[in-house]
Image (cartoon, rainbow, N blue to C red):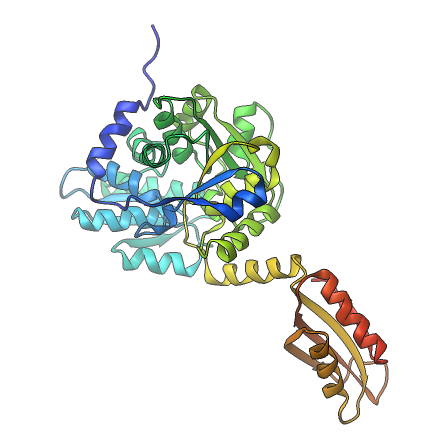
Amino acid sequence: MTEQPAVTIDDVRDAVKRLDGALERTPLTHSRTLSEIVGTTVHLKFENLQYTGSFKGRGARNRLLNVAPGTGVVAMSAGNHAQGVAYHGSLLGLETTIVMPENTPFVKVARTRDLGATVELAGNDVMEAAVHALAIAAERDLEFIHPFNDPVVIAGQGTVGIEMLEQEPQLDTIVAAVGGGGLASGIAVAASDHDRPVRVIGVQTERYPWMADALAGRASTAVAGTTVADGIAVTEPGSITQQLLRDHRVEVLVVSEAAIEEAIAMLLEIEKTVVEGAGAAALAACLEFPEVFAGQRVGLVLCGGNIDPRTLSSVTLRGLANQGRLNRIRVELDDLPGRLAQVSSTIAAARANVVQVDHDGLGSTGARSALLELRIDTIDFEHAEEVLAALLAEGIQASLLPW
């Protein structure tokens, strides 16, 4: 006798009805520019436009609808599940407590509190926060709302897939970030009932490839270091989600941090939309594995937009530097009147723009000279070399510096 799957297409359809009118039916739009860049037909699902900034409200609300009135709930989250539980719990009249890792960006902690939850900080990551959340649930008789390893939560996330295939029935592939696997497994269930085959591909960062490793039956391949995609920084893939991904033959690709950063910057510049690291993971997969998607109609889930402003600023500047559009130049000058003006006019004549100047009169090679470090806007790497050549032609000692 075949065992009944934890989540069925009927569960996802039921979630569509239960969530009707409570969340945004977010746009799915064709991106002509990104399609040209990655060599496939790209459609973007803007889940970052949900009120709480991510798809997580779908699963959270679907699960909270099963909680008895007057019952308090507790959840652990790095941010998006937290906001989904806090917001929809408040709408449904439920008291919510959220346990977040101690290193959670302040903006996510503040936003979760603003949405009505009590926030407690514990642990170095989501899984350590879960230990504290489970202890609170037992001590205070609260109902625990798991962010991904819960069939009702997974069914709620699957409504993303239902919407995408209604909006663009000819999609060949749907790509979604994977942390614990709730979104990708829910979409896989939704796609399984479509009237034509639809492949679902998950994406993880090289820093947290735990689901990819588990599905492949291999030892951890995690690369040491922190990740810009903190929303999918999960070290223990869900047992339910893992089985669903396996049953539906979902492949999980592992992408570099550099590709995720490039995707964040690209979506900001080209699509004028802000996404967090997890929200950019699907595009990162297309950038890093173009051969996997060539010639297909691909739907990319921009699953969240809750990025720390400082992280966004850093990623944007690094992106400009990687494209050769923001450069550092070191100049050594005789410490004489007019020399700084000469540098500035030479750069201007080369059609570049100085955006920052740091002056160091003590770090030079002589008492009558000074070092300048300039940040300049250029068109590309070739233009930066032209600016450097112009300075050298004027007898100005200059060199390009690495970032």
